[in-house]
Image (tube, rainbow, N blue to C red; front, side, top):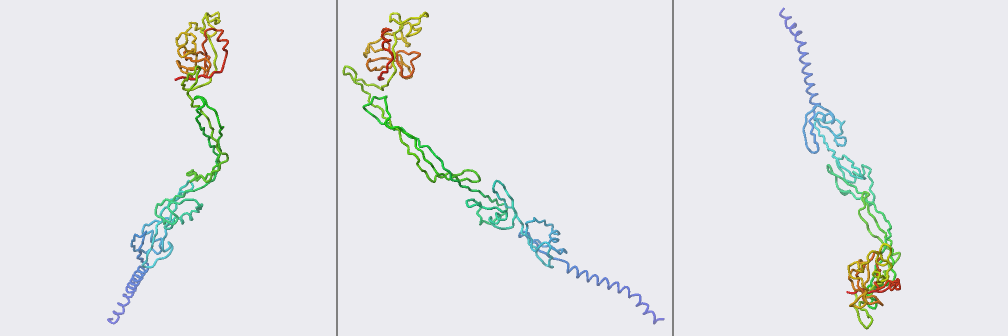
Length: 358
């Protein structure tokens, strides 16, 4: 009986050993598997490194575990779907925006590196020969860089311009002051200019004269003007004057019955109208003078041309003074006062030369 006890004891221990061995093997396998599956990864995100211990196998899964999101233009190495060694490294180069202003629009483009020329090429932007790019094409890009393209366009046009003629005045001492005559008729010239216009984005920024051709020469108008101010009057007298002029001269009487001036039914005279008081518009007695310096004639004038009380010398009639005016006396016109209506009628209308005295 004693000899059977050991046999029975061995039979009861066999299942426990198997179970214990099983768990040992499983533990070893799990430990081995854990060792095989574990990853120690260094993530470099734009140069900032982070270490992570994970059981994820692909780059994409490791980044998810690390809580990192990507822009579709970011560069990741190794590729997202690649597996990782037990000890590995993931490098992320972040994309950044670059803004391109061209043809009235602003484009945003995400890059990780490159030059200005690369950005234009990737966006299909074609430069013309004169276009300006800021910054220059060889400059490397940087985050939030603004690239501006200015479209330059040049156009040649022709323009015609009038060359206005001038008036050249030449003194003539043998001609009385106040008179002039045209020696040479002037005319305008004409030129044609070839001009280059420069536009920046449709706005004119420069205008350059390339060539100018004279189609017709300008000719100045030449005028002789009198400078003489000395008059040789009758009796050998020399009179100094300010200027000479031609006037249309008529004659009138003082409008009184004594002068023989016709009076209508309203009591108005033919020469002076309702003013029959034998005075001028300045209140001076309307008495015809003799034409001497001491007893000048009285003339009616337009005061805008010959100021009141101005002394004049009338060729063929002597001295006169502007002491009257009339409704019909306008411009270069005078009315010469005569003693009688008949003398005024005989005078009629004449063209006279008068001299304005100082």
